[in-house]
Image (tube, rainbow over all chains, first blue to last red; front, side):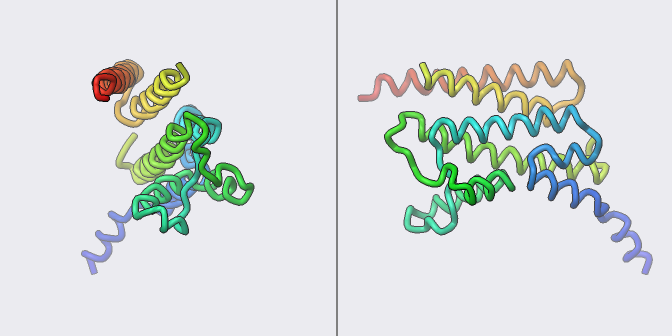
Length: 136
Length: 55
């Protein structure tokens, strides 16, 4: 019984999961929920800027249904998925859906989009750790 | 030129994010962010220079 209580006490609070989920869904929202406006503005701003730059450079968002493009496309899709709502809204709005190989910077665009997603995963984990008291 | 600009912009964004996430305190963050930025630029230019000699 005592062990169960201890393990429950060591569990991260629900707010940590909410901050992480909000941070993943909307870059910067996790830190904003914690009242860390500057951190949210700077870190969220980096993800938003990187995503927007990726789209502007001609990058495209991979999806899991692009299996015929090779196994790596699943990895790329996972990276892109890190941008949360930006990914889903762009997909729904028809933004960055297709490759633009004629643009010399399209490969850069793809990298910008993937790194934006990976950075947002890091932001989400950072928001989780702050709420769980593992980081200040 | 657009390629160099894209690389510089990319390095700057990564440096800001890593600086904030990786260190505590303004001074430490600035130093770490600058280090990351210079490393990205140095390695990028180094690889570009090496590739220049490969036909």
